[in-house]
Amino acid sequence: MDTQTIEQPALYRVPDAVRLLSLSRTVVYDLIRTGRLRTVCEGRARRIPASAIRDYVALLEKEANTR
Image (cartoon, rainbow, N blue to C red; front, top):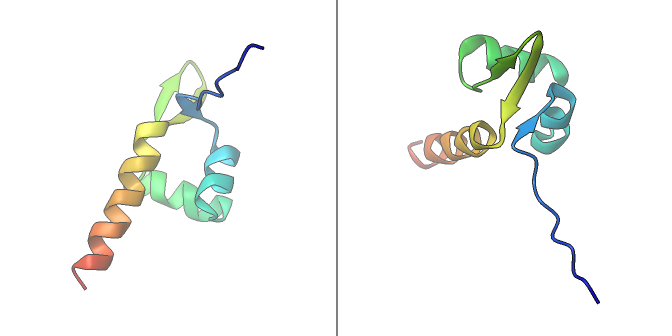
């Protein structure tokens, strides 16, 4: 029996990031605009790297620990 590994995408669309982060679309676009959530562009498509999502969550954890 073959076992398939489920790989995480390297790049996410904004709606995917909204779902992953449990934030509104407006908040995600605000995070992108302010530079708190990094994006990359491929042609006209804007994508959010998986590493940028991890970095943003780490930033939130760091900010929570400094309060």
